[in-house]
Structure formats: structure tokens, C-alpha cells
Amino acid sequence: MSVPTRTERETDLLRTETAPVRRTLPPWVPYAVLAAAIAVGGAAALAGVSAGLGAVLTVVLYAACVVTVSRLVEGPRKAKDRVVTTVVTSAFLLALVPLISVLATVISRGTARMDVEFFSFSMRGVVGEGGGVYHAITGTLMITGLATLISVPVGMLCGVYLVEYARGKLAAVITFFVDVMTGIPSIVAGLFAYALFALILGPGVRMGVMGAVALSVLMIPVVVRSTEEMLKLVPNELREAAYALAVPKWRMILKVVIPTALAGIATGVTLAIARVIGETAPLLVTVGITQSVNLNPFDGRMATLPVSAYYQYVNPGVPPDPALDRAWAAALLLIIIVMALNLVARLISRRFAPEAGG
Image 1 (cartoon, rainbow, N blue to C red):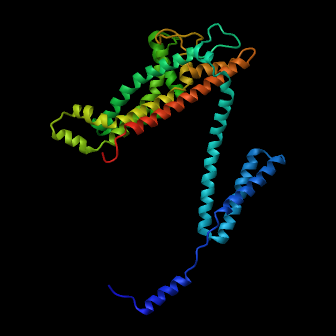
Image 2: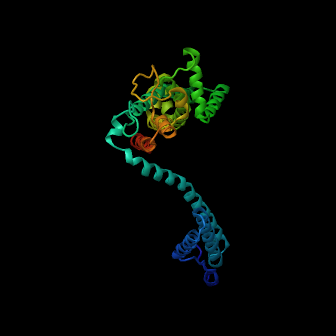
Image 3: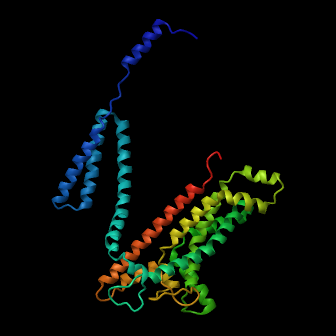
């Protein structure tokens, strides 16, 4: 190892002393600028400007001031970074505005009817105040359960076929149609189910099983895609080890591949249920509405939470307040159910996912 000479050491020391010192803004400066911008935007709102324009003025003023100060102190490169950070943060906050507004509105207007009567009574013979959504809850659970029974076997088998068996043009065609089905409007699924049963049973028929078929059309592509992606994550070494033990392919899939990917598949199925449980348009066409409890999905109309909330809102009667309260409470219940299903999906993913390196 060569020892640096005195000249080299002096050169390095001189280079260190003459290197430009990078200056940065104190941490409190952006917050002070933001507080000043909020004050100006709030003053503009109090002066008669709308809240939206006041928010836009706040963001523009903050971005201009912080970029100017950063450019003078930190240089153009850091100033550009602060511009991008401001734009991304503003876009995130803007995306949160409708979500927070919807949640606040539904919670504030839906909690008034969250009582025992709301969950234990139907609307049979109820005019005005009182009543509940027991009939809609049972209908939603039965129709969604039937849709799950239809969708999960079909979707899982299709996903297994795409990953383990399909090759060439057939696989590409199936994948293409699965992608197309993922994006079809929900009303199209409802019209398909209605047309199918109208050809068999005649026009004007309404049954719970029709709604289940319509929802299964929306669920199947989600289950197929989640199953396909989870099966692709299974290491090929597991398949090769099973083949080395002379295990048939069908048994290898049944005993090795599917159990390994079961946590991800269950998560995908739960998210698919959460995706369709609040659908209204296909159930309006296929199931309709009734004010009584109907536990037979193969005979007559059934009530569901989204359709019940829709009819309570568009036909409130006189006085309208009790029906509107029931509609908002049904909407809040749907939000709670969807949120619970998403939490269940996360718990399944964390609890049953194979450990890294295991």
C-alpha cells in the first residue's frame, strides 16, 4: 500500500476546504410558509372566495414561496424536488377529499337509525317511521353466498387451468376474455342474467338466483386473476420435487400448489365478495325489491341492501324523513360490511401466508 506524499495530502486538504458547502433550509421554514399560505387562503375564503378557490390559492402560494426560497438557498435541483413533492402531496390530499366527504356524510346521517329495530324488523306493513332492513340483510347474504358458490369453483379451476395446463393461443384467448370481463359494466351482467332466465322461464321473472348469476359474472374474472397470480408465485422447485417422487400432476396441484397459494386465493375471493356486495344495477334488473323476508332464492323477488337503500331514497313517501334515514343507515351498513371484508382479507393474507424463507 502506497503512502500518499505530502503534496497529495495538501491537495486533498485544499480540495476539501474549497468544496462548496451545501446549504439546506431549516426544517421549520416549509411549515412556516405553509402556515402563512393557509392564513392567506383562509382570509380569501372569509372575504367571499369559495373554499375550493381558497384551497387552490393556498397550494399555489405555498409552492411559489417555498420553491423561491429553496432556489435561493439550496439551488435549482432541490427546488425542483420540492415542486414535485408539493404536487404529489397536493394530489394525494385532493384524492382524500371526496372519500372523507362521503364517509362524513354517510356516518353523520346514517347513525340515527342504527338501532335494534333497524336490524331485526323488515318493512312489511310499515308506512312512515319504524321498520328496518332485516329482509334486505338476509337477501344480501343469500344472494352473495350463492354468487360465491358459483364463482369460486369456476374461477379457481380456470386459474389452475391457465397456469398449469393451458398453452399457446387458447391460453391467450382465455386471458383476453378474462380481462374483458373484468371491465364490463355491472348493468351488462344484470341484463345477461335477465336474458338468460327470460329465455328459460319467460319474461318478467325475478328471483334471487338471477341476481346471484349476475354477481357471479362480475366475481369470476376477479377470482380467476387472483388465483392465477397466486399460483404463479408458487416456486417451481415444489412442483419438481413432487414430480421427482412420481406424484401425478393432478395430485401435485391438489396437495402442493393449491395449499401453498391458498392464503392469496382466499384473500382474492374475499376482495371479490367485497367488490360485488354493494352492486345495485344488476340486482335492480334481476331481483327487484320486496318489503318482506324471502328465504327462497328460487321463488319470487328478494330484497338486498343496495336496492333497498335506492328505493328508500327515490320513493321516500310522505313524510320523507324516515325513509331517507333508513336509506342512509343502509348505506352506512354497506360501508361497514365492505370495510370488514377488506380487513378480513388482510388478516387472511397475514395469518396464512407462508413465511419468508420457510
